[in-house]
Image (cartoon, rainbow, N blue to C red; front, top):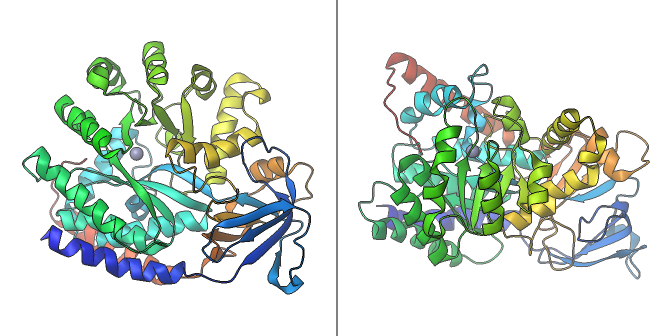
Amino acid sequence: MYLSCLPSLVFIFAVFVVSILSAQADQWIRSDYILTMAKGQTDALDGFIQIGEDGSIVAIAAGAPEGVDAEAIIDARGKIVVPGFVSGHNHLWQSAFRGLASEQELYGWLAGLHWTYGEHFESGDMYNFTLYGALDQLAHGITTTLNHSQNIAPTYADYMEQFAAEMAAGQHFIFSYVLDSEEATAAGRKAKLVDLMDATAAIEDRHVCLGFGLHGTGIYRSIQRHHEEVALAKELDLDMQIHYLEEKAQSYEKGQAMFSDLSADGGVWDGLVYAHFIHVTDEILTASAAAGAKMIWNPLSNGRLASGLADIPKYLEAGLAIGMGVDGSASADVCDPFQNMRMGMYALRMRDSSAAVMSCYDILSLHTLQTAKVLEVADRVGSLEVGKYADFLIVTPEAPIFDPYATLILASSASDIESVWVRGVKQVADGELLHHDMGAIKAEVAQRIARIVQVESAAPDESAQVD
Ligand SMILES: [Zn+2]
């Protein structure tokens, strides 16, 4: 059933997305504060960006564009132009469950969310919840996300609604895929993923899927599954992301003890990305950095769930590649990269009583180019450079600018975003989604949540298992 319905499902939503990202004439953006985040360019550029009809950047240079009609230039002088944020770890469907289990740490929160409501999902829930999460991120300035999808819905078709929703949202994404455990063999599990990748590759360009990865579940299931996933990731040249050493109360010692098994036979390599990676030992840190493994830091979620503070300066010193994520929308209940950057930077500054521990430039780089590098999409997103997609924000500063990086990081919020652009197409203006009816989507989500809550209260069942 899945194999026959998927390509048509992908195609239907791809057609819709093509209309969101349809080609248009060249555009020019003029600003005196373009923060390109390109390597080596730390001074704000007083200049312009030219966007080609395919939505990529064809020129970026100082001064004003020459020979261009003034009416064709979008005047953002006095405003800050910055790459769209990249979020390296997210569970978009969780957006429907914000504020839940507020007094709990990770396992109590999982019990209050996944293990309470997951088994009551029905068709359409994953689609609407994921769409809501993706659009909410877009409105907060996240133009590329890695959706660490989760298999909590009753059927595989329900699970795949997460992919369809992202194809429709208009936000660039990488789909972190869970192998289908309903398939009895490794070959069967692989075939489903390969089929999805092939169906996506066959779609005409201008869709928003930047690629695939694996959501490694062996860490919860078995070492054998971990090594099956590692072998498949390497065979298909995919990165694999795993939750690792996230919380302190129940599992970190067990997780530390697992490292020798996880890393055996090349199980930790330069395609492995840890989400969280807080409670490490020196041995695990050193071995991971030496193997080229990477991590996604999620300070908002780590604060909300009392998970702990990753020692980012120490990890950077050890040579670990680090990106940032806002995590699932019910553990960082507002998917706001401005909050995420401040939470992370301020926590480190508080801990060390030192402002030198993390600069405004460095935290912005972590949430843009460095995350794109970790996700291996820096050839297309993460900085404003010729050849990359024109994914950017125009931010209206709240206050006079002394240092645009400081104004952006310390004195701006998502509410100061004037517009959000993906591939040269304006997606959000003054907080409003331009290609979706967010009011209708919120109403649909509320209705679906009300049904799930009612079913749960009528027939509680604590037997659900989750990836
Ligand atoms: Zn997560």
